[in-house]
Image (cartoon, rainbow, N blue to C red):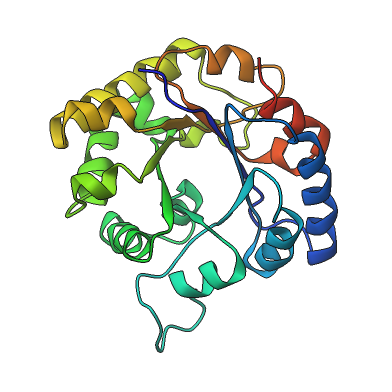
Amino acid sequence: MKRRPLLAGNWKMHKTVLEAYSLATEIEKCSAGLEDRDVILAPPFTAIHEVAKVLKDSCVEVAAQNVCWEEQGAFTGEISPEMLKSAGATAVIIGHSERRQIFHEDNEIINKRMKGALKFDLMPIFCIGETLEERESDKTFEVLEEQLRKGLTGIRSLEMKKTVLAYEPVWAIGTGKTATKEQAQEVHAFIRKLIAEMFEKDIADSVRILYGGSVKPDNVDELMAQPDIDGALVGGAALDAESFCRIINFI
């Protein structure tokens, strides 16, 4: 089954509002005419509104980098789904390894964020991935299965159809190390098989699974050629207009 490719740029904690405006403007120009793939930018919270204005008449969507599960209330430092939507976001990254590793978000919290996003019609980009220690201990599939089963607890089939998955091996994020195309394909195939077991085959066949972990202009083509890799969640290379434009225009 042919799935529509999705290329997402995660800007993390980079770019002031002015810098974000400039980068979004460059990406808007180089995305013109792309009709066979989706492109998403995830700026920091402070720049979502400005970036959304820049991209208003383009094919590029805007995502947030996290979301609370509550509509409003005494949750200092959190951002509600409705706030994100009102700023112009249509999607949100959830469960990124930096949220798991640095800020100690566990599968239960991530599951609540997933439900909050889906309840308010934000498309979740749900991230999973193993550490180097876990990979070297042959625990990759065990870790990913736990993250998937616990992170997707209570998610219905209809909601799963609106969800994007992103496999990000922690050992490849920002390190310059990239999983080989064979390693990435093996894991993506495992994820798709597990989704078929958890939900149903037609959902597994249609769900998009992105690869993230040092995706660059010089490796995106071979990664995107793999049958179960449907796109990329790009970090460092998304901060440079020329690099990200090459990635979204992969062959």
